[in-house]
Image (cartoon, rainbow, N blue to C red; front, side, top):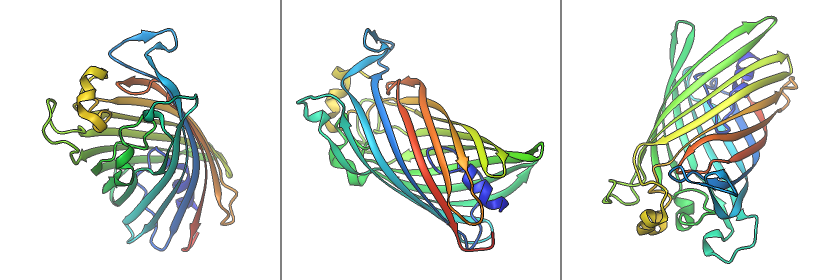
Length: 300
């Protein structure tokens, strides 16, 4: 039961997974549906009436999608996972621009392996390596309604986390620090290979307020290490790789509610996040997700 609670309190939805590897013989299946919306981009500190801070795109962009995430333990310290998202991105206002054409397909497909390193000062650590690929949406990467930048990236991650009692219950806090080496879409540009490599930090802190309810906070941020500022005169020379050429960064904060009914029944998660800071990226990204997860096999 304790392992199952750790798993659900640190779900895979654009947040920290934590260092607690899936037990051998356990198959964790997570299915989520999500919605996302943005309108305003940070562009070298410019402002506008429509956005106050930032510049508006021609039409607000929304995305609806679903994700299947599966993980299982290979040994007592090692687990593997794979995630497959599907999405539909579209403009919320009528526009004739082909950049706002509705896009439907697979998002970033990802897989990783994680190894539990041990404990230092009551903090658990794990290390992982993985790959994510946007090959399935490469052809539509130049649209404002894209599903990603169409690149393939190699990932190395350090996971850290701690569980501690809070009165009769407990809290779980974890942080994942990842480095993405992004295989180039263009290896010879004025700013070097694009897209630039990225650092991502994600964290979750959740309190089990009852045996069936957890409440928590989430944070997610990424920083692209090199690229162009958001200026159409600068990025237009990159053609379909215009968005991949940006030196983009963003930080989002949010919260989550986890409901665990027990007795081997599926758990539910409701989460939402909102951008609080961005550079050459949307300033007002808002995401919501509803997910269900279940553990199959093993002793619980």
